Amino acid sequence: MAAHEKNVAEFRARIAKEKRENKAEYDEKLAELDAKTTDMKRKLADFKENGQDSWKTFSGRV
Image (cartoon, rainbow, N blue to C red; front, side, top):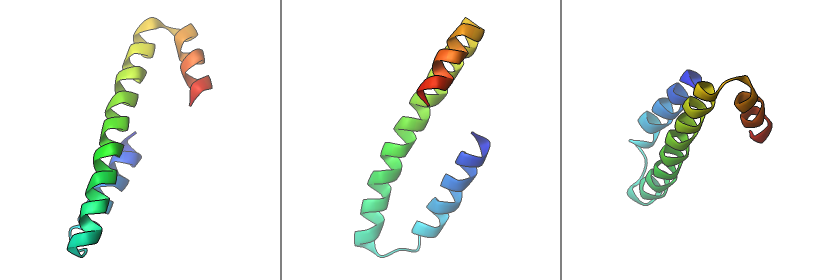
């Protein structure tokens, strides 16, 4: 997860220099990615709390 967050941060830094029309599209995609990342973190925390069986179920979905 840390590597993913680092990559997203680096991408945000690169798009800060983009043209306005491109930046808006990238910002929209990043907002979607942020929502998915937050959801994945929540699911991961839930599965870790519920033990090994839940982890097997979770890892099979990814």
